[in-house]
Image (cartoon, rainbow, N blue to C red):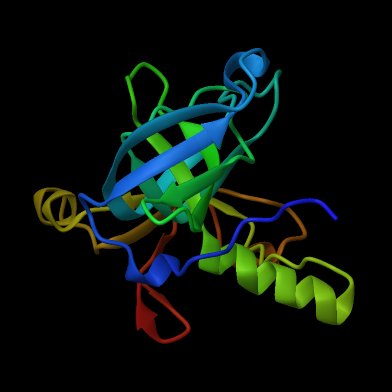
Length: 178
């Protein structure tokens, strides 16, 4: 009998579109709202503490960048469009910046919910590498192929079993350019 919100379609988002973030900033200011715009789509970020003694760092790809203020404590709160539809889930902020926040697109969340309803589990593919993308400019300047430079390989991961080694440069994955 709890009230619910309607889920939108994150595939239809446009840069510049007005959005509203809801959360509990700093774990203290309950049900706070902030308004901003979508600043970017399809961003890739490193999320986490960045300190190996405090936690883990996780790569998040295809996230929504927003100028709506998302602060620590807002994670898990909805990112709404101007019609009040949930178009994302707030997950991260850029450290050392103001009003650069990130949200997981709601269509990604929807597919995870559907998977959970079918199987009772959430599965996430895990290749098992830490990597840094080599841009076209960096590849040309350093006489390297463009792709993903492998900084580390997790032992007993799919990458390790496939023979990927530290210092490799992955240029194709599944036949497609990286």
